[in-house]
Amino acid sequence: MPVTGVHIWYYYICKREVWLIIHQIAADQDDENIDLGRFFNEQTYQRDKKELSLGHIKVDRVREENGELVVGEVKKSSRFKESARYQLLYYLDTLRQMGVQARGELLFPKERRRERVEWTPEAKQELEKAVADIRRIARLPVPPPPKKISFCKKCAYREYCWAEEN
Image 1 (tube, one colour):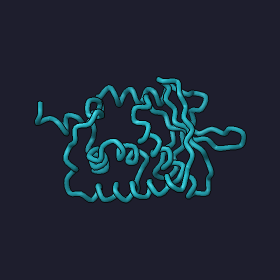
Image 2: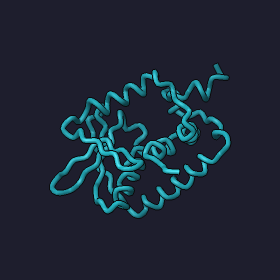
Image 3: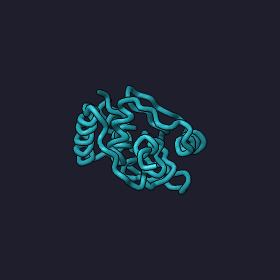
Image 4: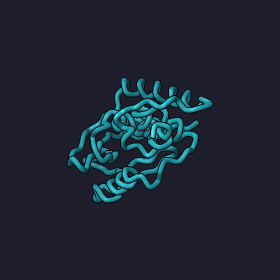
C-alpha cells in the first residue's frame, strides 16, 4: 500500500482519521476548514506556486534558491507543526530515494512564518516506524476508536466520530 504525505500528516494527529482516509470514507466536503485549507494553498506564496506531483507525493511549492532545490508545504497555522514537519520530511525522504537532494520549508501564511526543515537519518528512522504503523492501521477491519483531542473541534470527520454524543 503506498503511503502518502496526507497519511503521514494525519498519523501525527489522529490515527482514526488515517484509517478513514485510507478506506476512502469521505470527510464532510462542505466543512469550512477544508475550504480554508484549499484557499491558503491556492492563494498564498504565488511566486513559489509550482506544485510537484511525483508518484504518491504532491508537494505544494517547489523553487530553486542558490542552486538548491527547496520544497515547501503550506499550512494555515503552525498548530500542528509536528505533523506538518513529518509530512515534509516524508517528501524530502521520497525525493532523496529518487536521487534528488532538497531542503524543506514549512509555510504558515496566516502567521507570516517560514520554518526550515532538513532531512536527517533520525527523521528517516521515525518515518519508517510511522509508515509501518500506517500500514498496520490500514489492515485493521474497523477504525481505531475515537479519542477526543483538540483537533476534533475542526475535523471534517467530527460528525462521523461523535454523532452518537449529540
